[in-house]
Image (cartoon, rainbow, N blue to C red; front, side, top):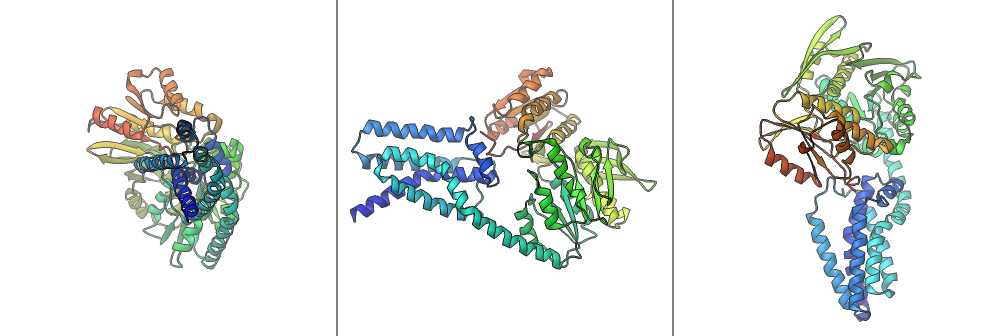
Length: 521
């Protein structure tokens, strides 16, 4: 009985110790799309403070064990338990940009991790208590590898079963017009804008939030698509070669949209050529009676030779050769105004949205609405009623402060457009940003250029994360920006405290990009 209690005590204590580190490891695995290659890059990043903290805690436990000398196993175990409880308390206070989401998949992974760690702890019972504590911390991160290898066949089987059901639903409802939307950035905004423009005239379904992966799209189709729907607007994401081809074969849209092409996810695409070719499959894999919609202002799209003879409709602002061109654009805190010449007649549009890229996205929505036969009077009215897209140049009043929330996944083109909008705003112009991420070897130079572009666009710059924003600060100083108006904080919370203390309701604060915890190293 005593032996059983000792074993139970060992399990409880060391599983408690594993809990915090294991939860964090799973959180990062999830943020890295459950891919071991991505997770490894995060785990072994030399700036990974989370893993470094684990190693530091290991040294603390070893030191305690050394001070206690050998033979005081129970004392060491209870100190380890106290340490684990303290860490769980600290974890509950921690605020993450994106916490672990307890999906069915994650719950299965937790169950496997629990078994693996229990077996490891039982096998390690012969070791000194402090050594076992150290190994538990390290193994909490490393156990992700065997867990992933053990669960991946089952996850793949579940994924295929659900996906086949979704394919059958699409085949049964073949009267529904399917619109696929992709791009390096602007996908979600365009999806929502297109839906707002056509939803009053067509019964639509859109993939919610950023459901742009095979599983996200599968879930949308299985849970939401009904025979009554006339149009299915489907956002299609890609962060490696083959993703768009796979989704095009899956959904088989008749309309395809490419919003933009840029160095987003260059880490996983490895070259701009791969990104361009993959994104343009959205047009090239359309049926001959289909229609493609492209943004001709994007240099990569404009210079690409499309290998498909289907109809292609282009939109633009700078490129006057586009089929639909927005002109006479003006901005205010209330939104934007612009005009478009269609079939020889000029139409004036008003929208609450800000930024050139949103106007480009509206042009795509107008083009799609026209192709669907919606009357221009309805299109003008629907554009006026477009809802602001959350975290995408969304004007907000918080505590009587005016914020322009552009916190979703900043990119080189969108960030410059956001600064162009900020330039036109009254009062002191403030930007709060952690910079741009996931841009591969070009990331530092792009962020440096971002900093250089802020001159005359912003009066005050608040940077979040000293290491992450180093190149932005370098760009700011290179441009001659006053260093006294640049401040750097470790956390978003500190940045907001500074905003509330030093600025007023007359000022405008641009929130440019969010920073997932997987990159906040």
